[in-house]
Length: 243
Ligand code: 6GU
Image 1 (cartoon, helix red, strand yellow):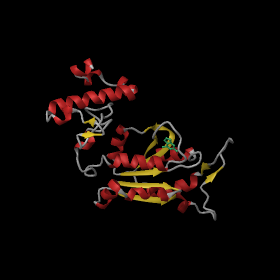
Image 2 (cartoon, rainbow, N blue to C red):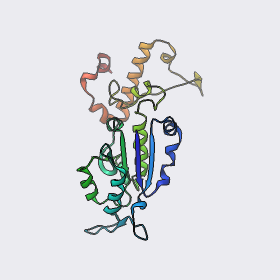
Image 3 (cartoon, rainbow, N blue to C red):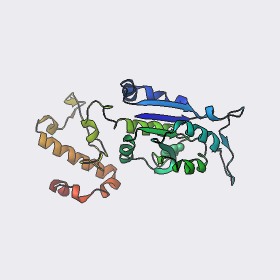
Image 4 (spheres, rainbow, N blue to C red):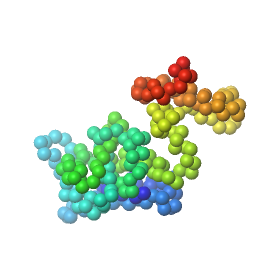
């Protein structure tokens, strides 16, 4: 899978060569291109922003450099992702959809955002996703793109070592859908007088699975009542209903 990022701060993306993503790139499973938007700004100062029509604070990114850049980087198979706090929520399900695409192009806005005609134009050309990573405001889309690239990349077959680790995730589609994961433990069995729950050392796989599901429900009820309210009653077994 190919990722291209267009930004005025290419240096934000050095983490792409680290850790999980770097290894997947070395293996040829993923490839990354990071491009400086200013390379498509042709005036002496390589200007990419201007004052907003209608007035107001801040600056808006000019359409022309974005048009030149996107014409060069997009292909008919690309999907264009525009990170913005006014976008549709980026969720695990959205990550899964994006992971099936051969090519994602990320357009990082700064300032008050990109001239809206850019998104309107490219909607007629490719699939465009304006996405937000949460209800808070970042200074620009760069950090949000790192979040999205990492969430999408680990769903690409072969990127994670262990196929199981995806299906047990919080928010994973299927069994644990709309539940967050419960607590985890490793050795030693006692640390600062705190013991690992006995059931996890019992070797009884049925009881362990039941305990993990109960803990996921307890934690979801305590921390994410919004998720519990959305849970499909058909997904509950008898024991869940008693909890
Ligand atoms: Cl995707 N971009 C920016 N600039 N701020 C955000 C965001 C994205 N998601 C939440 N806040």
